Image 1 (tube, rainbow, N blue to C red):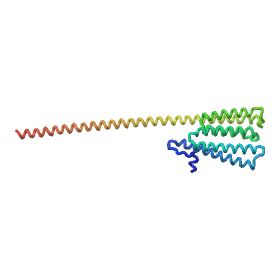
Image 2: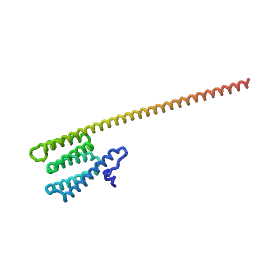
Image 3: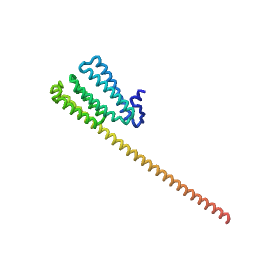
Image 4: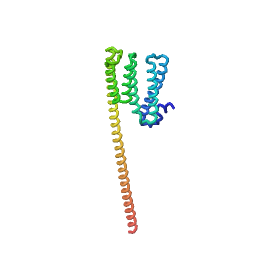
Amino acid sequence: MWKNILYSGNHFKSKDKFLKHKFKLINSILLIAIFSSFIISFLFIFIGNNEIQDLVITLELLYGAFNLGLFFFLRHNKNNLDLVIYIGIISLYILQVIIMINIVEDSLREAWYFLTVIVSFFLGGKKLGYAILSLVLITMVVYNFQPFIDTNLTTVESFMPIVLLLLIGLLMNLYETNKENYEYSLKKANRSLQDKIEELNQFNLNLESRVQQEVKKSRQQELKIFEQSKMVAMGEMIGNIAHQWR
């Protein structure tokens, strides 16, 4: 039953092993997000700051319910996997924007963006990763240096997350480049292996054809020898008959 939950009720063939593990990973993340949201909202009822208590509880309950909806949406059709990934990452970004604007007392509020960027690269690939990285970078620059909201950040604290975000982007670019190179090498090796297999199959076909031809020639030779032996035997028999007549 637990495996059925993690795989969205789908049954996968052996060739869909990668897709199977991806379903398991996404469903695990969604379940963790759901339970974490409900637990955090429950804890804030007792230990939260009154100024932000209602906001955090509301946001966490809404976020947990939203992820629960994504979980059942994915069970409805396994083709919705990529769409669920995109929606989940964008919703996480929106949640962090709301927290960053309303909870200025949290000095680590921008650090959660790093997790969003890394997750977007791992789950959504290079295209989605760069899109979220660019979006987060623009958000940080605008928020940290705008004059309308007091961010409670010093100049160093304003620049540091941006620098760290650029470093994370550089590291993820190196990771994606190495990943693409590895996938290219693997595909090249697979193509080479397929070519060798085709050559071997062709060689086997040619060998089988040659064997059949040799067998056919051998049979024809045997028939010729058999016919010649018959003629020799008939010649000897006729010679014996003629000798008896004489």
